[in-house]
Image 1 (cartoon, one colour):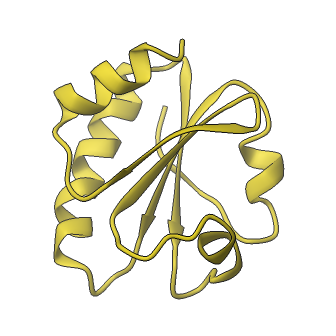
Image 2 (cartoon, helix red, strand yellow):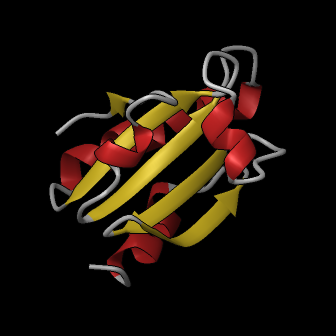
Length: 103
C-alpha cells in the first residue's frame, strides 16, 4: 500500500472506516520532509492501516477543524473517530507501536 493524498473535500469519507493515519504536512516544512519517508515505509508494512497525507496550505479547513497548529501532525482515526494525535517527527517503530493498539 502507499500513502494517498486526501483533501478538505474527501477527508471525512477517506477516513470513515478502519484505522487511518493522516500526515498533515507542507512543502516548506523540514521535519515534514523527514517524516514523509517514514510514513511511506510504514504504509508498505502495515497493510491493515490506510495512510493519507494532506497539504495544510492547499487544504486549510480540515487542519483548522482539528486545531492543528504545528506540523508534522499525525492524526489517527478508527472508524471515523479520532483516537490519537501526535505532533512532530516520530520514528517508524514509534508509529508502529502507536498504531498497533488500535488494530
